[in-house]
Amino acid sequence: MSKKEKNEEEKPNTHEELKGFNIHINEFGEIISSYSVDKLNKFLDENVEDKKLKDRDDLNEEK
Image (cartoon, rainbow, N blue to C red; front, side, top):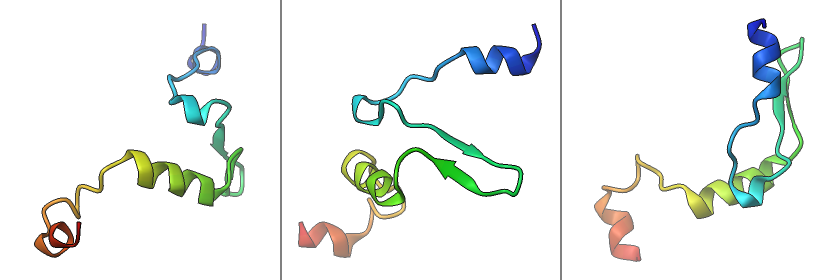
């Protein structure tokens, strides 16, 4: 079995809120996604901690 066939059969584990999410890059280098950028950003803001901002003192004081 070739690599391409193997990769197409495997489905990645995804968060429940992202079921049905699909993303790929077409032949022109454009990113094609099944979800809007705004929906993805909202999900990431809620579920992923920003490593660059976690140690900033000015942000910790506001919380």
